[in-house]
Image: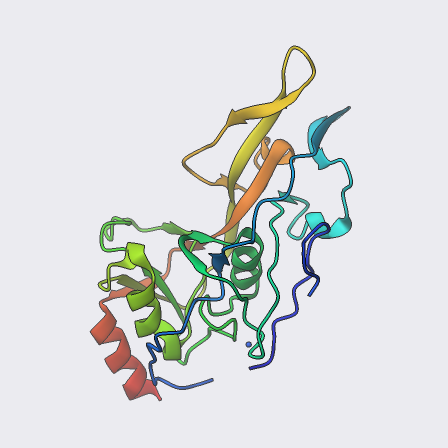
Length: 240
């Protein structure tokens, strides 16, 4: 595959996107967004400056690559070397998404498994666990990057929270909504500390974004078809 070029953040240990409905569940397949053993969070060197417009969170040694999306400061995490397929190496930490790879695949609407373009003839495929979302809600906010047609079944089998029985949201569009992360502030002793870890994402434009350390990019689904996995694969076969 052609590697997705990542603008790696500073201090990372290593500096180092088909129209097909064929599915795969190779035993060695690990989703691109999965965090690997050894890809640890970077050291905490956060600072807050007070500006006329309000406080703003920074890294002490900040680099422009630390604000990859709309000026939001992003969580740093190590990067393991890539293999010959340009995929991350190391034992998978199945319950964790790498914050930078999640952001990049969500921003570019690339497949969370292979990092190739995720658009299908029917739109974008977003998966959710069978109990994750209320399907009667008109709007869904998701932190899960899309999957391509080839890897829809594989993602369902590999991701623990999908339980091999995901809800499938087939969306024609999925605009960016906001960011999930941790809000920081200054203590009485002028020390940076965690103020809140909101359950819900903050929309772009929210007044707390300047002191948020982002870890997941969120998209909004409001025009979609709700399917099960078999219905999706059948529809893709018909559209191929």
